[in-house]
Image (cartoon, rainbow, N blue to C red; front, side, top):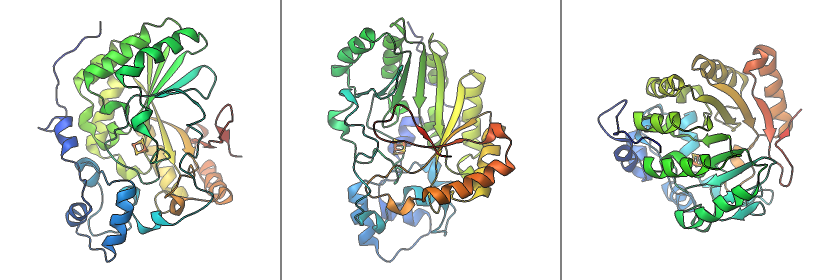
Length: 337
Ligand code: SF4
């Protein structure tokens, strides 16, 4: 059995659940907090209805006040541009629907599956390729979980399960422990990958209890974080990451190349150095997945390559993330060269 110790708070007096329930969900309140005044608030509110604003206090505290161009603000602020129609952009840009085997179970690549354990996140990133994902019918709720386990048992080639979402670390510790325990009981499953933004946007989530759950599993565990800009790696985030490091959890990072956020060599170079200072390996630099509402973030592939060549010239090879895109139906991510 996985050990369940009491919750120990790392960085402040609130539990992570309390902090999450106090996240910004109203546009006017976030703008007031940031001392920002925008003219066409109604248009922003229309975009907000398509994909509601959600920003943790921790993430908001890293946004520069009075700065409408702040790179962290751009990741979370609903914009009128999201309402523009673009025929190259769709609701399901990476083909999740076709690859869904059972509710919450996506099997695209050899030897590994993606398990959507929740639709909840701690932050709503405006460019998220799952911003329109039908989570209600496609999450591996406890009711569907037995069928998922049966599928995994019957596919001995599957050695790795990727917990994704939504963000798997929004699950309660008990539910997370139950999921991991069930997965590790299947002999051929050896690795557990957790795709999460929580250590970055809600560092309080990295509790001693979470660490115990991860340390007590027999599965080799990898956290794939999602950091787009060095400004996200503040002191409280670095403390949370240090706690993950001490637990010997492998840490990788993926970044999405976003217009107006990180589309310049200096930002990406600074990010790689800062990740490495925290023992996080830069892993993927993704081209934007063409999801409805996110066209204003898009960088043309030829422009992405110009930026990428510059970072290759400056960084040592081990700090250069792979520039990739996801093409529907392909057996792996596609390297951009
Ligand atoms: S799934 Fe990840 S990228 Fe999408 S909104 Fe949640 S945290 Fe952001």
